[in-house]
Length: 139
Image (cartoon, one colour):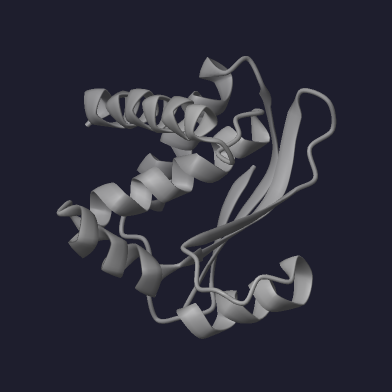
């Protein structure tokens, strides 16, 4: 089950559509949907997690903790709404598009995709684009 939690004033306007899309993404990767929690927060909240749990003293848009068991995806995905907004401006895309990219990015990590090397990052971007098309085709 995909759930959305808010540690900031932001709220998704279309939780049901996004949840259904992410469920379809999981199926498209031949995975099973377990408990996936999205936690929307601000930069300060996510920075604290980044320092405390990952020993990274930087701002980031997403941190995902993967608790998957075999083919069943489970985890907590923290998203900084402030970082997503800044990145959307930097990449010259809408906030909505950048947010969806970040949301699917966490799922793709759980499905086994990495982004540490240039080659892996390219594959991750291709997968994100592919999965964004699934959302666009449904709307």
